[in-house]
Amino acid sequence: MKKRLIILSGFAVLVSTCLLSFTSGYKPWFENDPYADSLRAVYSQPSSQWPAPNVSAGVKWLELDKLPEGPLKNPTAQQQPVIALGKVLFFDPRLSGSGQISCASCHVPDLNWTDGRERALGHDHQTGQRNTPTIFNVWFAKKLFWDGRSNSLEDQVFGPVNSEIEMHGDMAVVPGKIEQIAGYAPLFTAAFGDAHVTADRISGAIAMFERTVVSRKADFDHFMSGKKEAMSDAAVRGLHLFRTKAGCMNCHNGPLLTDNEFHNIGLTYYGREYEDLGQYNITKDANDVGKFKTPGLRDVIRTRPWMHNGLFDNMEGVLNMYNAGMPQPKRKPEQVNDPLFPKTDTLLKKLNLSKNEIQDIIAWLNSITAEPWKMRQPELPK
Image 1: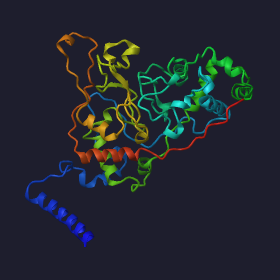
Image 2: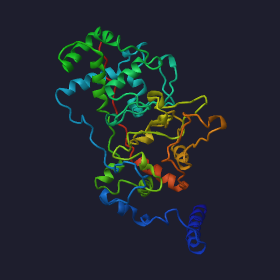
Image 3: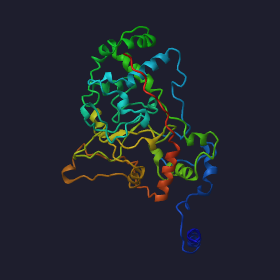
Image 4: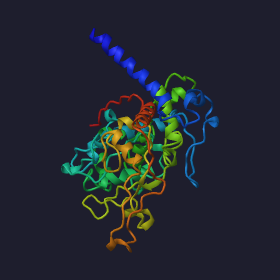
C-alpha cells in the first residue's frame, strides 16, 4: 500500500508539472534553446556541424575532439630504454636530499598522477603554496608549473629536485649519487650508450617517461567514435551547455580542453594571507598579476581538489563560483593607483546557470573522465 502511494504521488507530481507548463507559463530551462529537443541528434553529427560555441571575440579556439594519441604511443627501439630508465628515476626517492621523496610522492599513479591534497607536501612535511597538478597529457603543455616558469619537461625536472621545500635536493649533486648505485649502470648504458650519469640525462629520461603518461579513452571519446549511446542524456546536455551558455570553451577547448594559456580567475588573495600573484612572480609584468595556467580537463573528476591552491574539493563548488562570475575584486581608496591590483579576466561573467544545468555539466565532465590505469612501482636499482 505504501509503495502504491509513492508511485501515485510521483505520478501526481508529473501530471501537475505538465499542467503547470500549459496553465501558468512554466518554462523548463531548455525552452529557449533551439537545439533542446534534438541535442543527441545534433551532436551525433560531425563536429563541423555542431552549433557554434559561445566564445568571446578574439579568442582562438579549437573544437572539442577525441583524445589524441601521445607522441610516444609507439616508441622506437632507441626510446624504449630511455623511457624505462625515466620510469625508474621517477619513482626513486634517492633523487631527494632526504632520500625519502620521489617524483611519484606527489604524482601518484593510483591518484591519477596527483596527490589528492589541497597543497603539496614536501621535505620535512613542509606544505607548498600550490596544488599538485596531474601529469596526464603533460606532453601537450607549452609551459610547465601553474605560473609557466619552465618551457620544457626537461627543464621542469630541475624545479622540484632543487626546491628547498619539495625534494630538497641538488641537481649538481644527484648525478654523483646515482652513479654510485651499481644497478643504474646497465640502465644508463642501454639508454645512452654508456654508464655516465649527468643531470641532463636524468631530466631527459624522466621527461620522456612523463610523455607516456596519457589519459585513457572516456565515454566522450567513444561517443565521438560513433557509439552515440556512450553518453547519457544529461552528459549530452552538459556538452551543449559547456560549449554554449556556460562559455567554458573560451579557455577549455580542443581535444585536451585547455588553451595552454594563463588567466586571472580572481583567486589571488591580493594583500591577504594566501596571496599568490601567479605568473607575475616570474615575468614581473603587471599584466600577468594573478594569472595561472589553464589546466586540461581530461579526467578532471578524479583529480580533486581543484584550482591552483586546491580551494575546492567538490565540483558543485567550482561551478557555483564560475556561475557567479568568479571573484571580481574592487579597489579600495588606497589602491586606486596600485599598478599590481589584480584584474579578473574579462572572459568571466555571470552565467545564470540553473542547478539542473550545473548537474548536466558535471555529467559531461564525468564523460571526459576515464577509469584510471594502474602502474606498479618498478624495482629500484641497488
